[in-house]
Length: 133
Image 1 (cartoon, rainbow, N blue to C red):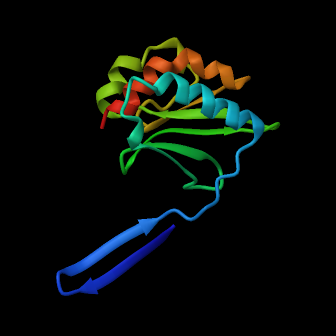
Image 2 (image 1 turned 120 degrees about the horizontal axis):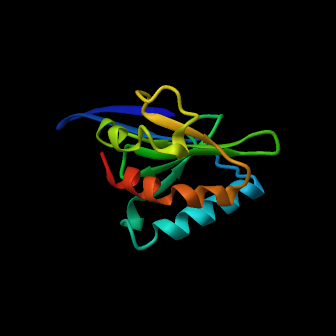
């Protein structure tokens, strides 16, 4: 990440940009296609961005700061994590889809998957997470 601080006659201007290149595996591209298809029509697609905020995963961001979905799919590991903010945690704490998530106080709940299409079982949660703050 690059953070730029500029001083000018109007005061201080701070901006940042994520400069990491996004290089997706074939399975991650398929995951991206599946998620994008079920988000279209449910959200304002002009507010969706894909960012590489870490070497460990790729992130779907809604607006400027809502990193509602992180994912990594390789030959060695396949998972995604969905942002479950406190207002959603109560709703999903006993949901069997999140039975492996032991710490329900974490902001991102991780789900291990076998293939990119497994994400379809979570589209309701992902859409709700995207639209929540």
